[in-house]
Image (cartoon, rainbow, N blue to C red; front, side, top):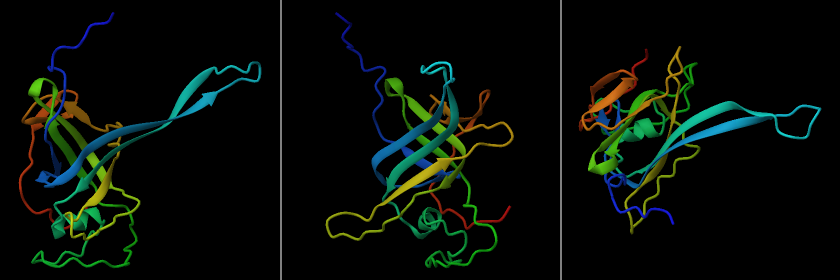
Length: 195
């Protein structure tokens, strides 16, 4: 007979915050899901029907949640509008103007939440883009407006760095050896500024 787990030291449950470029994204619902998906190719030889090897040909990281805090600065980011929020922050306009560069805006994303033993765990992704296939803004008498969103982590160049996980409360890892202060302040996400 196996051992019955009688401790909660390794269980992870609790609240979390999403921080985009150091700004707290506010209320969400349904939790946050961090997914790594891999694509493998089978390697077979003509001399046998057996599988000889598997080769990883693609890897993707997605972070998904449902946003409830939908101020115009956050909607600008979620809808992928680089420019369109006026200086007063009270109007967001959409257009089909393409300026020759259709790459989405990049951000740093931190998921700051619970860790084992009632401690902290922070996931840090230095390069993400907002990539939902569809955003549905539904007004309903029975529930708050929500937008299901998806962030896709991009590799940093030239080393292919995707992100880090740290079990510290006030720090995130910028690489395997460097911890930096976790910043997640209330504020407004500024308009896009071309690099």
